[in-house]
Length: 317
Image 1: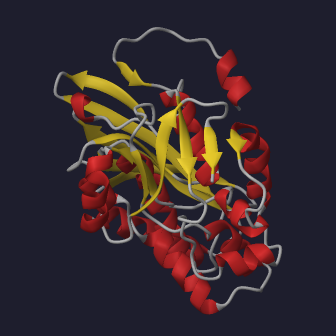
Image 2 (image 1 turned 45 degrees about the vertical axis):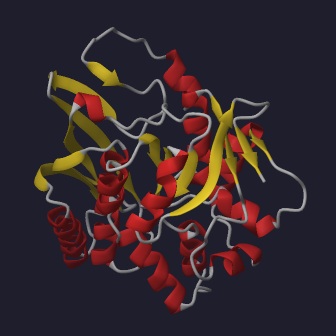
């Protein structure tokens, strides 16, 4: 995809504040000196068994890109792919789950589009608002910043274990609760501190999204593997081989940008590449503010620091 995007023609538009050049979480378009639009789209196949919960997770995941930019989502369009002869009640529950999560976020659903497809897919195109001077892009990380993360890792391997019938119910419930949690509060809190860069950790995994931040910012991100927290059950399932295909793709995509010493347990290294759904925010902020942010947001914790650009964009210790 990087190669394809690099080949696309570009037309100058001074109102495009953030496009696809830096692989940011959302695009930003200037409307007035005081207002810009934040726009994103995300959809995927079911990752849990319950249709209502799947719809709600899909909504939380789509909203996350706007929060990662420091924006406030206000409208959404649904995207539905559903079998022509599928269970209508299941479809209704998917849509209801998404609608109620959007309502929780204060985001209005204006409509959407559906197609007949044998494989179920669901998500949203979300529009938000932001002041042009308050955008938190992924390109602003500075040497000396602290790296803070707001959720635990492991939704990919737990979802894979669930599909194989090997996941314990309490572990599925823990992962589900994490995926359902909006990043709204994390966004609100990070805006109270000196935040320089942010990205939400989703399909490319922690190291994949860290790669994008490091490359866009021209720095090296040092991540302490021992500091990263995992969802209950994630290490056990990774150790047992419940590895999603997306994790292998992420390793192939980002692995060349990562310097890591020998001795890191394989399951820990795997989880650093694990594709997340509705994952946490990875934030680069002033070192002096990191402790205050951690105290202000339950679940936030430091996982590393930002260094001047070294040999590799990411250094795992």
